[in-house]
View 1 (cartoon, rainbow over the protein chains, first blue to last red):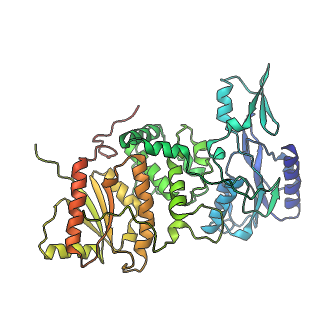
View 2 (cartoon, rainbow over the protein chains, first blue to last red):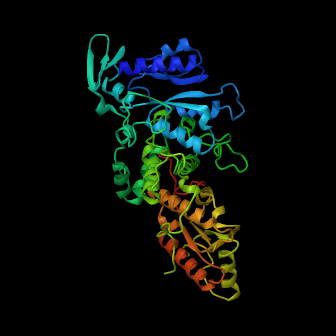
View 3 (cartoon, rainbow over the protein chains, first blue to last red):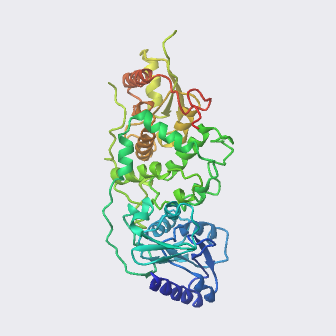
Length: 327
Length: 146
C-alpha cells in the first residue's frame, strides 16, 4: 500500500512540475485518524500531502463539473484527478454527458482494493477513542491509547465495494498499481432481490421508515458526480415540484425524483450513502435501477465513451411486457 | 355508503390516444367516467415526475397512453418513452406502489373500442385496489413514522 502512495506522490509531483495538469485532486490525511479528505494541489511540492489507503472513500469526480474550464471557469487548463474504478466510471459518464471535456481531464487511475467503512470500525471500537490506524495488505490495525486491535479489511468493506464489478479504472491516462481489467461478474444485488420478495405494503413501510429520517440536507445529491444540474428540481420554483416542508410525502418525492434521475447513470459508487448524515439505506433503493438497466438494456454506465446512454437510445424490439392490454 | 369511484389521470398523446378517445366518444362507446384526460404532444413528453406528482396530489391511478411503436408522429418519441416507462414502473413497484396504479398503453387514433376497453380495465383494476391511502400530500393515510 505504501509503495503505491510513494508512486502516487512521485507521479503527481511530475504531472504538476511538467504542467501536464494545473490542478490535481487527490486525498490527504483528514483531521481525524479514520478520515481522509479531498485535497486540491497546484504546486509540485504539495504532492507529498497525498495519501492512498483503504479509507480514501470520496468520489472525486464530483468536483470536475464545478471546476471545469468549459463551464465558465478558465483557471485550469487541465485537471488531474485520482480515480478508483467507480470514480473513473463517473468521469466517463461526465465526459459522455458533455460536462467535462476529455482532453481537459487527466485521469490517474489507481488499483482499488475496496474501501473500508470507517463507521464499521468506529462501531467495533464501541466509542473508544482511536489514535491512529495502520494497514497491511489484508488487515487494518487500529491503535488506541492502551491497545491496538486488528481487523480484516474484507469484513469492513462498504457494501458497494463488496459488490463492485470494476475495481480497476477502465478509463485512465496513467495508472498506479497493478492493472486488472478483468471485471468481476455483475450480479443482481442479493439485498435488492430479498427486498423485492417482500410483500408490497412491507416494502412501502421500509421505504417510508428509511426516508422519514431524511432531513433534506441534500448531501446525497451534492456528493454525487451525476448531480451537476445548476438548478436541481428540488429547488426549482417554476414548477415547484417539492414544497419547502418536512412533509414525508415531499421527502419521498425528492428521493424518487433523485433516484429516477440516476437511472442508467448511477455507477453505484456509494457516495450518496456515505454522505448521508442520517444513515439512510439509500443504496437499497438506488441499486434496483442499476440492476434493472443492466438486465433490460444490457448496459453498465461508465464502461465506454462511445456506447449511448440507455435512455438516450432505443431498440424497436425493446421488451414491453409491462404495457396494459385490454382484458 | 356509495361505492368507491377512483380518480384517474390519463395522459394521452395528441396524435393517437387522444384521437382514439375522441373516436370512442363520437362512436358513442360507453366507458367508465373516472378518467381525467390531459393531452400531451407525445408520450415522450411524459416526465416521470408528472406521474408521481399526480399520485402525491391525490389521484388513485395514472394512465399514460401513446401511439403504437412505429407509429409515433415524431417517429421515435414513444420508443424513448417506453424505456423510461419500464424503469419508472419497476421502481415504483419496487418501493411498494401497486403496479396497477401506474399503467401504460398504446392506442391508435382508429382504436376507439380499444381505448374504451383499456379505460375499463384500468378503472376496474384501481377500483379493486381501493383509494390510494399512502404517499398523498394531504396526508390521507400517510402517518408520520417516528
